[in-house]
Length: 180
Image (cartoon, rainbow, N blue to C red; front, side, top):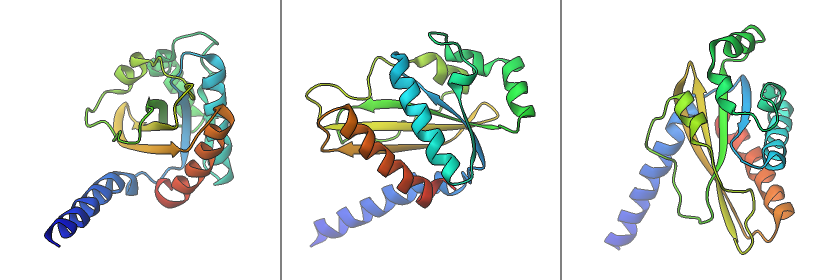
């Protein structure tokens, strides 16, 4: 009985802490940055998230509109481009990447600056053959500071199409519940 109580308390504390930072997010505008090596993965994720956020009347633009194909996303951290985006009404950035192909991943505790996070890159793909789970990490930045992180875990996947279907469904639920 004590074990069950301990598990429930730990789950409550984890859930409260992970959503506490999201409660203050109040997303109104966003530049969506997909952190993927393959241009088709980057485009797929950015267009999916942009479409979802636009449905919730959150002003959104994908980074592919500002970063050349094959170009380095760190140009988003440069003053000239960030000033252009500020003039257009964007002050929030979300960097989306695959954290791993397991269900046990949690949001990173390290607070990277916006430029450091953009420099990291990733070699992971949206779907990897043989994977049945994939965890997507969302890192939200304002004024080059990390303001929130979130993880969306997609399970029971069998191909790229099923991964994107689950990703869209879970992202819609998360936007509705925690991001706005």
